[in-house]
Each structure stands twice: as C-alpha cells, then as structure tokens.
Amino acid sequence: MARDKDVLTTGDVARCCRVTIRTVIKWFDQGRLEGYRLPGSGDRRFTRAAVERFMLKNELPTDLLHGDAGPRRVLVVDDDQGVLEMIKRVLTRLPDIEISTASSGWEAGMQTASVHPHMILLDYRLGDMTGDTVVATIRSHTELPSQPAIVIMSAFLTDDEAAQLLRDGADAYLAKPFDLDELRATVRRYAGLPA
Image (cartoon, rainbow, N blue to C red; front, side, top):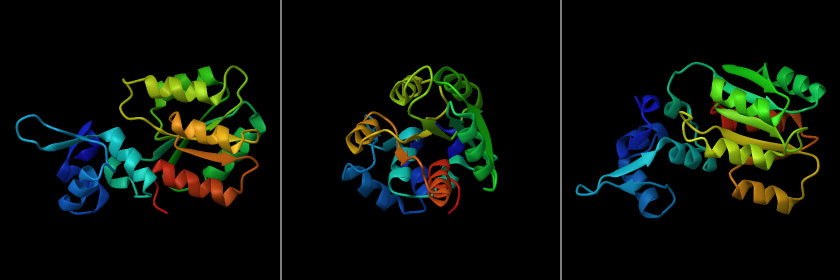
C-alpha cells in the first residue's frame, strides 16, 4: 500500500491521485511532478514528500496517499494560550482529526518528532524563535517518516515576507486575524481531510 512506501512508482502515484499512469508520466515529463528515472530501465520513481507537495499544491485530496492510517494529526503551535485554545476548539469539530499543541519552537520540534503530524499550524513569532527557523529545522529532519505540511500564521508579516517563507519551505500562509471558515478549509486541505 502507498502509505507504507517512501518511494512510489508511477502506478502508485496514479492510484493516489486518481488519474491514469499516462497522466503521471505527463506531469513528470512537463516538470510539474518531481521525480527521477531508474538507471537502466528508465522507470520513474517519486518520493512520498514530492508527491504530497504536488498533491497539496494542486489541491488533490491526499487520503489515498496516506491510506486508512487513522485520524489526521495536526500540531498547533502558538505562544498565546488563548489562541491555542480557540484553534483547538474550532478544529475539534472537524471529523477524523487529532490535535496536539505546542507553545514554543523547541516544543514544536519535540512534538513533531514524537507525534509525526500530517500538518503544522505555526505562529510566526514565538517566544524562543521565529517560524522560519522552525520550518528550516523541520525540513532538515530527514528521519521523519514524511514531511508535514506547514501553514504559517501571523498578523505581522508583509506579503513579501510571507512569499519568502513559502519559498523557504512553508506550504501556506494565514494572516491573523483569520476567518474561522478559512482556518477550517486550510486545515482540511493541508491535513488531507475530505472537503
């Protein structure tokens, strides 16, 4: 099953994305889906992280990529306890979700290593470090079974700063204060929950 593999075949990707193998080959040939060819056979292979990034970018549901591995794990990181509680309250209404919280960058790293979240909602300004440092640290941990989607939250970032965070490894940006429906939709999308 695809959820048990770190490297996926063209057929695996086709099943996860609910498309034909020909479509996956086309995505690869066009440079839209990052992958590589095996020496000799020329067969295409794709890392799980690359496929997940592609699916999220193109708003494809990731449920088949992860299989029926239980609830989607979301880590919420904010040094404001009131914000943590509000987000937790809003997200507990979503089905098939398991929420963990952290109030510092250090704690976010520890939780990521132990919980293996599918998605992290990360406040940019934490007491001990900024979100870009947390993103860089998480992205550098190659021992994680798969890289989580990371959504930065902030009331202080400019559009240029938010764009730089996306280039540096964050998957999305939510400006605070955010609309609760927008928050739920973002979590659904990046945690791989059905819409």
